[in-house]
Image (cartoon, rainbow, N blue to C red; front, side, top):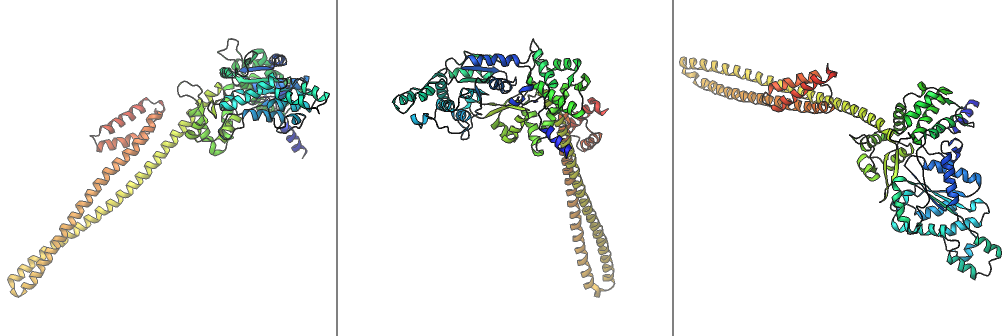
Length: 584
């Protein structure tokens, strides 16, 4: 029991690396490598009411907010950080951006304050923020609205975007809206203390976190927020020094973690940094998502799994294999009936055939063409195999989460297609054998029919000879004794009947032979069609054709020497067998 309790408590403790998921606020103690970014962004937020945080997808904007900015605000007591996410718009299902912001600000609860005495039906964003301020006296009164993945806003209808921006502009730029000020001036029940609290500035702060390639969309906000692009902060990939801190420092950190502290050897660290460095960046910067993926793997497999405390270069191995294993593991944990749809979506739909690059598909096309429902797409996003991006006309598009996943996906696709070709060839072979056995059974039945017809013909000939002999005897007897004339007439009649029966038997025999020849031609055609299907699989996959297929093709070609198609297929198989080293 004690051991089980110990295991359970260990499983509930956090790991030192979050892997491919963003850092949470609770993981701020192991959020290394972004100290300078946290300091600079926090100072900018303190100075300016509206800041735009932008950077490439996957660089860690959410992690910087969750594990950098939010803990700093709480530590220094300056503002109350509130995360707001809209989600992409879906017709008939989505909450408006304004309602989502109000819910995040109030927790979904109605706060009764003196504002209800002035304008009880006012539910503006300013009123929500002011009501919160009127019920507290500390930093919780000063809201810091952090709009993560702000590009989702632009998937909503224009009328909903305009309503959100109008309220947001009032929150940022208005001390007391005129409608409230007029009501306050006419309300004689307000005390001096009430008026002082009403006049207290909100001092709200706003941060829009958005992808770099969506920055142009912010131009649409200038009618309501003309200074929206005045104060921006670009989040870049990790420098080599910051990447080193992000690798080494969490491993050394003291605390209640699922694993003991450990170290990377200099050789292991250098090898890992060399792999992570962006070859297209002159400074060799590092994307955090790939770094965290590898480090989480090492922590779980080597430190927790094998009890290592010093990771040497031979322990870290080939990072490409780690990424390949990561892809396969995430596919295998899916329900069995969802693994093949997931593979076909990723391997056939999200990676180009020739350029080895990522592709992006809309969810409606994915559902229609690959049979992957929204539940499966959410699972793939949660596992960080895919990432979703809001589409400007509603819904989401999906793509691979990182370029480094492309080679493992291409390798998995090649292996899957080879296996599918093998299974298809085996299926065709089984089907060919079944049809061949059926043809053999039919041939045996035809043979038995022919033998029966031939036996009938022999019996008919015997009856004919017997009838002829009887006729001769009858003629002799007629010459000897006229009185036997009537008996002779009867014998002659019998001979005629037997001769007609023999002729009918001969015709039946000829018909049976004709049907047999037709069946043999049909069997040849069937064998060739089956063989043709297998030949296409062999030629398309550049596989080694079995020698018995060549022999079978030669036999069929021999029976049909005028068929150019047969000769062409036979030549193609012989050429492929001569060129394929696997046939040697």
